[in-house]
Image 1 (cartoon, rainbow, N blue to C red):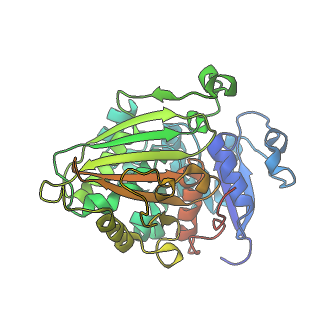
Image 2 (image 1 turned 120 degrees about the vertical axis):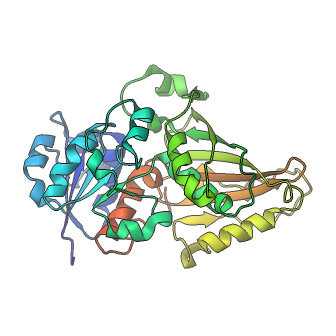
Image 3 (image 1 turned 180 degrees about the vertical axis):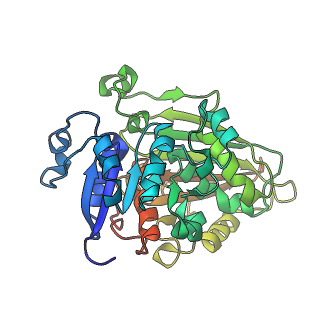
Length: 366
C-alpha cells in the first residue's frame, strides 16, 4: 500500500476502546478513511471533543456490513459474542479482521463456552484465528487475516511473565499469583454508580475474585512457554484512575534456585528475550536501574509506574527477587486502552498490511 489509502471500519466505535481506536487511527499516516459504527445517531466529535475536526462520522453497523467490500481492515470493538457473528461477513469480502473482544482468543470452542458461558457462533474460525500478542506471535500475525487481540490484563501479564516461565526457573506445580489493578475505563462506559468519579475517588473496587476471565486466557497462553500446565491466581480491582493496568506477579522459584537467583539474573534473562529499547522489542521497556540503597530501602524507580505509559503502546517491566522466601517478582504497567486494546490492534494491523509495526504508535504518551 502507498500513501494514506487504508480504509478502516471500527465496529462499536463509541465505547472506550472504539473511540481510542479512532483517536490513534486519526494520527496514523497510512490511514485515509476511518468509519466507526454506532447503534444510535451519535455525533462523535460532540461526544468526544478530542476528535473535534477529524471529520469522523458514525454509520449504523448494518451499513458497514453492507459495504463490507470497502474496508481494508475491520476492528471489532464489540461485546463478547457479537464479533463471532460479525467476522465472517467481513472476512468473506477480503478485509483483515482484528477482534478486540474475547471471541477468538481461545483455540477450543469448549474453553470459550466454559469461560464465557455461551456457545461460539463461528467455531470454524477458531483454528485460523491468530492470538495477537504481537511480541510473542509476530510471524503468525503477519500472515493472518483474523487476529484475536489479547485481553488487557492478559497482554500485560504475558509480557511480564513469558521470559520467566520459559526459563525453567520456576517450581512447576506452584501457582503464579497476580495482583492486578485496572483503571475505571476497564469497567466500560455503561453507567455504574461504583465507578462514577464521586464514588470511585479515593477507593479501590475488587471484582471477579471467583476467577477473572483473563485467568484462563493466561493459563492457555503460558502453557506453551512453560512446557506444561500453569495455574494463575489472578486478583483484580479497579483503582481510582481512569486508565492503566498495574500488575504485580509473584512466582515460586525452583528449590535449587530459590536462594541463588538474583535480580541481575532476571534482568539478564529479560534482556535476552526482549533486547534493549529500540534495538529490541520497541514497545517493551525494562527498568534495569541498579540498586543503590540498603536492603528494603524504598527505591521507587526500580519498578514501573502508570504515569510512564498512559497514552502509549509501551509496556514497562520491573523485576526483583525475594531470596528468603524463594520468590521471583515482576511488575508491569500498560495503558489498558492502548497496549491493552487499540494500540495493540493497530500494531497487529501494521504487520498484517506489511507496514512497520511501530507506524502511528511511536508516541511516548501523555
